[in-house]
Length: 112
Length: 115
Image (cartoon, one colour):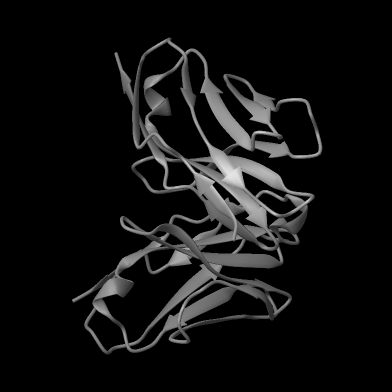
């Protein structure tokens, strides 16, 4: 079974600071993809960043970047220059066939 | 382009009833997936449809079913509702499915409360 583990239920960061959210996964797929989704209080899931496992280069999207360690099956999300609007639940996910497997999520609090 | 839409947004039902939820994908998207989100179990995959065919199904009882129409709109049905079915039901669409890493775009969800 595919599993995605987020070991930090809650994290807090001050505005303008940097925070890293952890994620580990277990998959038997040889070709897979990893995602970070954000779910604000409105509950609308929004894609933050996507990583192709066969690419060694870490994905980046503006203030968001990942540290992808394939051998360790680790996929952490770094948010730089945190903003109040970054406060949300963050979910790590991997694909398995036509489904996404999600971690339990990390609640990120951003303080002024 | 309009995003994924789900109707209704909120629903209250009683145990034993059945419910039908609707999802309209982004125009041009042929893959529609459904997820159940609860505080205890988190986000769990229900099923995925592509061109009116179910391609993948999660580990849910047969009370949960779905279908997809020729215009890619999808419905999911839950029969004989139980209290544990109270959840946020999320629909997501993509062009051809996430097996090749396509991004899934999520709707706002339908919040179901079973009393």
